[in-house]
Length: 110
Image (cartoon, rainbow, N blue to C red; front, side, top):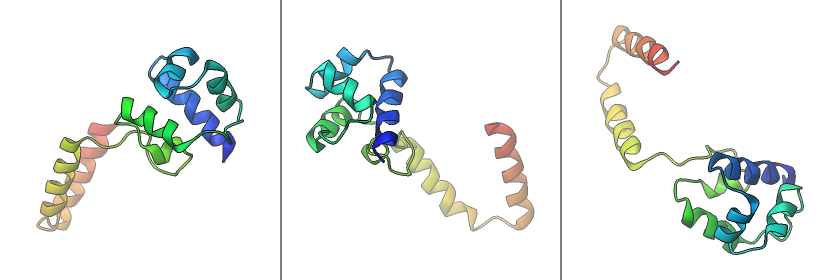
C-alpha cells in the first residue's frame, strides 16, 4: 500500500504540475517530507496533511490518494446530477433504445 501512496502523491504533483516545494507548501510540510513520501516512506503521512492537500484541491478523492480503489477525481456536482437524471430515465427505455444509447456512448466516449 505504501508504494501505491507514493505513486499517487507523485501522480497528483505531476497532474497539477507542482514541484515538491510547491506541494510541501500546500501540505504544510518540508520538501524533504514530500520527497520521502514519493520514495515510499509515508508512515508519517498524517491525516491532517491529506486534508490540507484535499482542501486545496477539493476535486481530489482523499481515498484515492491513500491508495483506495476509487477514481482520482471526484465527479463534479453537475456530473452527479446528470448521472442521477439518466439513471431515473433508463428504466423507461426498451432493449433496442438501450442498445442504441450504448453504441452512441461507446462512440462518443472513445
